Length: 266
Image (cartoon, rainbow, N blue to C red; front, side, top):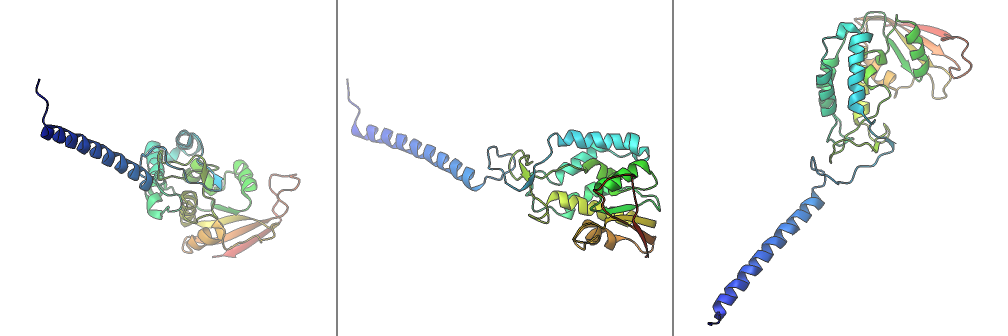
């Protein structure tokens, strides 16, 4: 039986060595991609960003869709032509798979345009630091509407949401508080909704302020002070009545006790 010569053995060793090198190169490339590109869309197992605020509300899609359908069917049937599925699609597209501190107006503008609605004159009611009281009032007095009584406010009231660059594109563990970063998706949503609500106001408008807080009833950095007041249209709004509430967390003998009413002519 003839023995294989040395040249054939050398060639076979070279082929084995080349194959081994190819495998090693592929493995190293895969590791480098996993290390240096952790935030690719759809990449499982990436580290989730950590924040101080509450994470995205569980079952967010079901809640938003349910509220939308309830609003256009029962709360305000005049908006029954609104497409809730499209509204949800635009809502999730505004923040999913995006860094939660880099939300922009462009992200949410399509949603704002689709969910836009008119507000009857003399019915706009703004508020600051009086949320529970003002909504108890509007539930018993249908002559006034707060932002939370509009479609955009009704759908998102009390919910939390933010995206994450890694899979599944939503952070259920934590979201940025408003003080952690200014351009988080929740603050962007409420600022834009508040601006649109103010722009739609006409006739006599109302605002309920808390006169018992140390920082003062009117604060320049509040949504009312920084967004809503500056976006009122003086050609549409004739005057604003300010309801200055005192001791709103004390004993409630009446649904609403107006301590002071101040009228400002626009």
